[in-house]
Image (cartoon, rainbow, N blue to C red; front, side, top):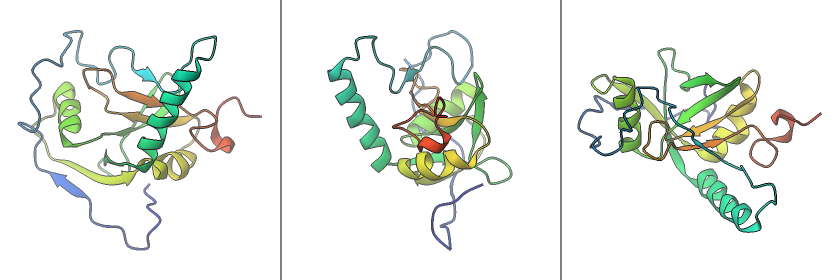
Length: 167
């Protein structure tokens, strides 16, 4: 499943191996090999008081993500790589090849070829997420030292028609 809005999509990029693309020293927390280990930052998570500064900071991050081209690995069928976690389907996206290399290292797959496409964050949130069955969002930089960032299926991030909690 891939819809980039063009009639003829560019060929996917290939990263023959991710070994050596990033220095994994210093990012492993030693708590296992799960690509989604730890508690990733939940985009849009606010304090009970609804901190206005946090909301502004998140709005800036979301805007930057929507305008950025991110790398999305493709699975064996040529579909966007996604994983289910906690009842939500997450499209895995990476800010650069080094972030993808860290993900591959955590999975123990740094030596294999990774095929990926560059996709705008807005395209992922507005077009691809609605195409997935059930709740879906985007996981950015899974396997990173800081836990990455999640853009969950909530209003203001994904289209209202697919946001959870919208009747």
